[in-house]
Length: 353
Ligand code: IMP
Ligand code: MG
Image 1 (cartoon, helix red, strand yellow):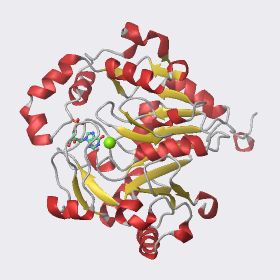
Image 2 (cartoon, protein in one colour; image 1 turned 180 degrees about the vertical axis):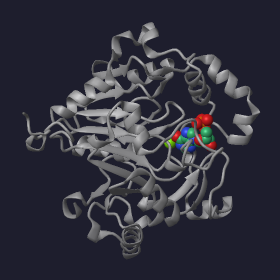
Image 3 (cartoon, protein in one colour; image 1 turned 60 degrees about the vertical axis):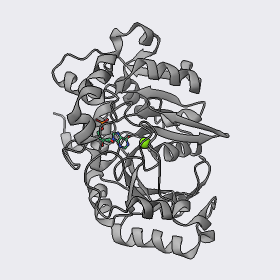
């Protein structure tokens, strides 16, 4: 008889060493696009997947003198070698996607899961007419909420039904799990932020699905045991667009004085702003099982930090801020962004991990 105890199940947990999920720690717009584009290049990622909700999120990437505002294509596109995937859990607006394929010239290396949901014009028209969504919630009106509602009703069209998407249709879950087995480097990019999660956020002022790291895995079709790192992205201050609570919110004048006023990528609205919030950050780390922090826009909080590439050269207030985060939150701050371009980063992973 076989002795179970002596068996080794080498496939559980896989031999892979790099399955990283990147999530937002506050209300979205933390700079996930910047961090993902940096990692895709620096770590020479094999597969970049954009999980999350869909085209309600805008991820900004500055690369080689150009600005890209992406609502569908993974920010990993900056590495020309990286395979790009849009998984089953994500919503696709075919018109936007085709425009972004053109802008990023990624025709030959993009795959879309057959079961990704499709946003049609009637979804957007409905959201525009809904005062609940536009006024009370402050939705981006990109059709995501209604499309997800239709998906729950099992009425939504899927990507495999759209003729223009035919050349890209694949089975993302199968492809990613095979890539993990082959020890490829996998980078999963979440959207929005932890407190916009339908389950864990500031309901009802949230987006139309869960946005935590576990949800990103479900979007792709990988089990949580496969993930080796969860990088949570915090901006050096907090912003929020749309309605809902924002603890410590500054007046418009104060936000302007501090240089924290930002314009939303998708809607063009002005973002509300507040100082970095340790309590929210602590909760977000727990909800995501985060293993590392990426801190963005340090140069906005401390202008002398702009373009600095090594920790020791940072102004001492900036160093103290990072040390406070580590001691309060008990998690290493491994990646620090000091400007919008992909390469404007202090990378401490080699020292701290
Ligand atoms: P919806 O997901 O477009 O319905 O928007 C619901 C709420 O989430 C609104 O407050 C939006 O402003 C917010 N939201 C949705 N997507 C993003 C995002 O990518 N960044 C920041 N806020 C977002
Ligand atoms: Mg954004």
